[in-house]
Length: 400
Ligand code: PLP
Image (cartoon, rainbow, N blue to C red; front, side):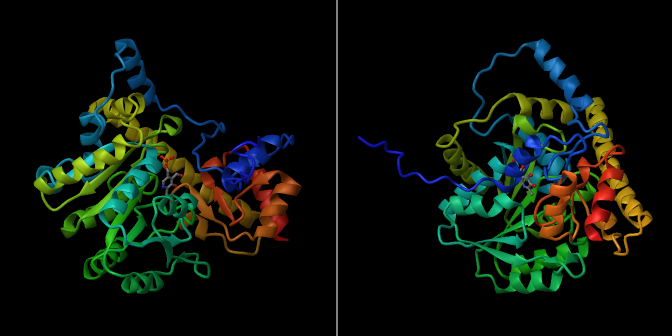
């Protein structure tokens, strides 16, 4: 008899993970992987932060038993995350209007949020930026939503087509869900200003839309507090909204899957009812989150010394990326590249949309072993003082 899997089709490869496989198979010693969304040190390594190492040492020495966590995760973690997002003196927190649950990375937070919203608003449409993080569409579609784009990136200015974005927001049906990158837009590196966020919040209110803020890079643009400007404006608006947050990058804890879903309700009593429903989503999915990553993040955030150490280390990552942006622009200019690349300095976060074409990206790979995403996105956090000259040479060559 034939296998029940006999007719199963091969799914398309994940484009970015596929790029990694090609990179790993490349035997050239000079190869450089600028495709991934990971921060590397100047030595080309994923860092284990000192603050994380210290908190882990304490935790391992205490040898805690590994009982189940509550469905929503540890209260110490959830409270620390909410304080990081909104500030510890936030009125929302004092009022008990927010709920936070520990989630499996930013992805897990988006997924729990999406599944919960599907129960709450079964007929809603989800809108994501054009372009967006490549998993947004698939994730909300797999939760059962139709997903459309709103205008975002403007290739001509290499910035945000803000008028287009506002116009699209104004066309959305009431109770549509709008996924917004809170800072360090992935993949473009182009963010809107605080004044523009105010206008976005105003339209979201007028049109009765639901904001879902994705915060995956807090601290990578200007600082922890500075990068939360969108959250501050939503918090002050009196609107209900959702936030997914991730510590994959800011704590360099990628594989530990540490993130959180925060939902802002209109009152404490309402928040309690929302929490009871979100817990049902979690319970029927993975039951409760793992212990280690969240315990480490909570320990770092709640110890004044470790928190300072973490903030310094995060600033170090932020500043190194900025140096690489500046250096790349200078090196391209020094090689006689006519095109103005100064926009790379203005882009924020780990990525740069370089404007390189699909053909140029292909040539970078085949001729030089420099791997970038087909859209021209490079991970600036994968550049370092040892590979940047080679990368600048390669980009110069493909531009000629
Ligand atoms: N959201 C955005 C915009 C991202 O760039 C990423 C990671 O690349 C995520 C969410 C997912 O984060 P995590 O790896 O914590 O699931």
